[in-house]
Image (tube, rainbow, N blue to C red):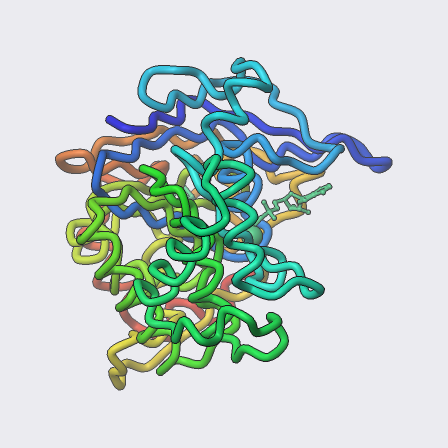
Length: 336
Ligand SMILES: Nc1ncnc2c1ncn2[C@@H]1O[C@H](COP(=O)(O)OP(=O)(O)O)[C@@H](O)[C@H]1O
Ligand code: SF4
Ligand SMILES: [Mg+2]
């Protein structure tokens, strides 16, 4: 296993109190696999993956757990070891491509800077490698002298992937890499990303709020809700047989990237404020299948090979799935 995240807890100290944005999250990233981390905005996805890079906002604190990369714990690693790991072993593509690229520098210069500063390359080699990286991600090397604002959204996203791949890392963490793009461009960027992943045998953690992106490119999925893992497992298995009502709801809420004519139904309401999350199952206020026992902490149930769900009713999932497919199952739930 390339990466093991174990019982990870990350808090934000805020003036209003402690926000436990990541609350006991565990998942694995096998070598050469694409792991999707999916959930609505505010569920702790970015906090969890930024923990892996240790580049976190000042208010964030590790409050428990471990992140083992090839057996070494990132949480307790020295700054020096961490500096060796980032870019060379683990690269991070932040949530907006504009965050990855500095607007005042030519794109090619930024890539060369990483190659020279972090990779110890000379000027000439860095320039050649930057051109090679551009062509790998489907950009014309002549555009290396452009500034980020001269690029379209899709091109900027490609450039930020080129930047991440600069020093041939083993693990690439991409946070919402296609979110701001229209569907056609999303597919093109994801196709390029998938080709590179396979060709380079990269391990990838892909963060997205869109479960159709997971279906399109991921091997494994980690569904996060309110700071916890609601469901996790191999993508084919989880999407064919979702065992957590939140996963069932997410699937109903998004059109497939391939385009289909399913009737969509949003999950009413929004994830809880993590300053004061509901007791018991955190999805309970929005769950059409909630029962009295759901006010108690739900068990983490193994429902298949490497497939688990945090739900009192996981053993009834097959029956719940049939009901979840009906659009009116999801209407009037939050109000009820
Ligand atoms: N810098 C921060 N300071 C305080 N709270 C934060 C900060 N960043 C995120 N949070 C809180 O942590 C929770 C999870 O946020 P985030 O990890 O960004 O979720 P996601 O990526 O799934 O949208 C949210 O409730 C958010 O309000
Ligand atoms: S534990 Fe209860 S409320 Fe939570 S997802 Fe399962 S059925 Fe719904
Ligand atoms: Mg995020």
